[in-house]
Image (tube, rainbow, N blue to C red; front, side, top):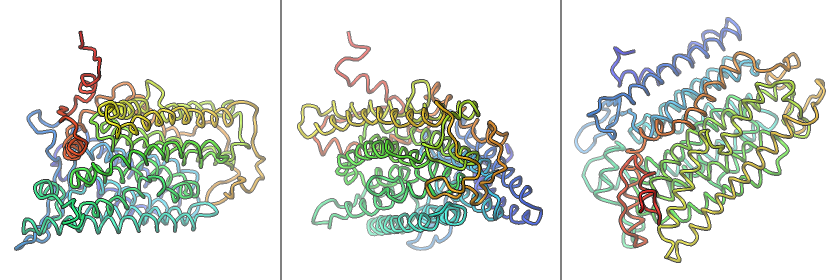
Length: 577
């Protein structure tokens, strides 16, 4: 692949899953084994190609600006007169890790479905690969139309994955997921279209290029006054509708627990690990840089929604009796931390939120995969019907505990780094305005977010204790349901599954995730530095607008030095005499 230009390399990575879906369809006549082997081969090849592209991004020549897009593909589509519309792909610091995560978790989704999917394997694996192509494309798109096409295309494969291979309420879950996300994304598209038209009215050129629109709106911002029709506010709310549903931000979350519980394991892995991240990515890519004044004005309210989501998700998780539903609500809670970090508008919290996107993707995907493995063995997800699994499957238990400790932020693992940066940045925001009465809610919300950490440890460790330790409890093999409406034999759950420890494909699915959980925890700077300049560039205008709005002194945080900047802004820093 060294002979390929970076642009062609990127195009190859996105096309490989599409080709793999066709190959899986052609393999259908050779039986289930051939189909899943071909899907696994495609997922491995795509991951290797994507990983090599990430390495090429990280090892670019030293003289190349960290903010310069990488592997850019631009194909003129309509460049004539006032139109300048191109099909454009590329990667930068905001998208590179999410691009790699999409390829990694797509392989995980294929491998955890190895024994679980017995019916219609051609359709299942074909849809998984189409979903992978859409996820890769949405993070590589540098054109609004292309972004929206990939954004919408992620809905279609997952709709069918839930609706066909899900559990008892699969059709209800699929329809609710599709309606919620489609309604939100249509409003977001209208907002993006308004941005394009405003830019055209100011410059005389119709373009859908994201970088060009961002620069254009910073030079000619949308009006934020009544005289201008509050246009920036209206566009921000339109984008918020789609991104908030996708995250999801409470109270726009009601589709998520049902979708997770009813989805097949591979669908849950992709949904929790990647698809929830597209909403936060949308805020970083569009809302903060293009609509800075509206983002700054909305920031206190969104910080409040993030903290409310942290506490709400944690408290609801505490009362769950279904292990998969508990982890679904834990996702709602943990995504609240990312919303908090994003709209605290502090460099440290912003970088922590971006890192936590990856951290949550790894831990939640690992936990959902392991719940699927438990369900295959015992045909239940009921916490009351499980117990003593550690004695039967010690390695499965070790991995579940590792991802649990990652999820609750144990020092030394990846989750601690992201949550610490978010909380430290939130307290920094509270301290920056502690003399102003308006900022007292920030202090209250930062403290409340810490309470969420305690609640997270409570419900996760309680579940681990009940399911893996204590007296052995399991339903007999003849049970046909799991007590929550899921058929034990539905779509691949079967009585001949041996209740052994990890099989080879399960270990292969989880070990790479475990490696990154430890690696990021030990060496977080290696994952923070590549993204820091892009995050600083994306959020600078919103931070400046927030400082102006609240009459704060201007901040000058060098990209990539957030921790040092935080220390120097505190009343006592290590360098103080």
